[in-house]
Image (tube, rainbow, N blue to C red):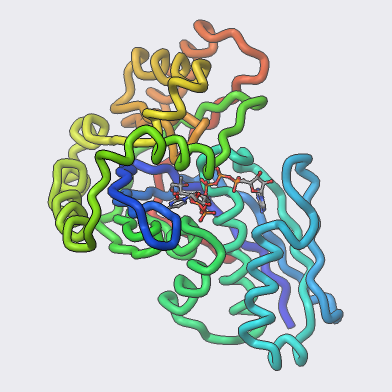
Length: 313
Ligand SMILES: C[C@](O)(CO)[C@H](O)COP(=O)(O)OP(=O)(O)OC[C@H]1O[C@@H](n2ccc(N)nc2=O)[C@H](O)[C@@H]1O
Ligand SMILES: Nc1ncnc2c1ncn2[C@@H]1O[C@H](COP(=O)(O)OP(=O)(O)OP(=O)(O)O)[C@@H](O)[C@H]1O
């Protein structure tokens, strides 16, 4: 049996609109998700035991069965009990490069990589849609992470409509090390504040989804117009996160004022991203931002936008 090393990339939300409440307690969303080439490295080694073991040295990442990557492995064992009994367990090692609890789907992409990797090790031959369906049982962002690229994500986030890939752009990611935002808190706060604006029927959800699919951002992506893409990015969760986390609001303002194509918070934050036309532009903006915002724990990453999802190396 082979060992595999996989690269699991982060995501940003180019568009996130909260459309309404769902019977399952989650929110109905219309999003445009985008893969970014900032990757965690996941190594999977068959261990000959009847258990999964997880190794990760990051202080904020759990090493037990609550880790999303471990949960992904357990899900596979439950789905394929006989194959698990034959092939045995796996040691999962995670080298973390994606900031944790940052709105970049770090845990979700690790889980997606484990699904893809176990499919290979156990020679299951699962299709992409089968892997996406399994992934949806682990979280709302996980199905997207299996595939990656540029995708309209609706429902809870798990219904995927890939669109023309967005390539040639770069992104700055900026995050204060000491700040993290709880995703449930962000959605609950949004519900408390904006529930009266929610659409309520599946027909209304469908109509809104169609509008976004043919709307300004998706057209700008299809026509490869970077300035328009930057203009039409949007995130409803900013309305609750930015007033509460003033450092994030300030960071967003400073980065936005320094140029780039557009600046926005990713997901439930607190990472702020700026789309840039080139690596050089991104480097200049980061240099200037560092001069304005003198904070030892403010970190920047520069990475290309990519259409490559999980990679097996
Ligand atoms: C903010 C985003 O990252 C944007 O891509 C996602 O919507 C969140 O995705 P995720 O972290 O995979 O979220 P999950 O682990 O499925 O859910 C975490 C919590 O977020 C809230 N949640 C999430 C997704 C959704 N469509 N509606 C919600 O209300 C729920 O309170 C849920 O308990
Ligand atoms: N493999 C993992 N990598 C990172 N965090 C994990 C992992 N497994 C569990 N966690 C826990 O999940 C929480 C959220 O971390 P994660 O990095 O996935 O957040 P996020 O980027 O905000 O996710 P999303 O954008 O999907 O909402 C953290 O508090 C962390 O302890």
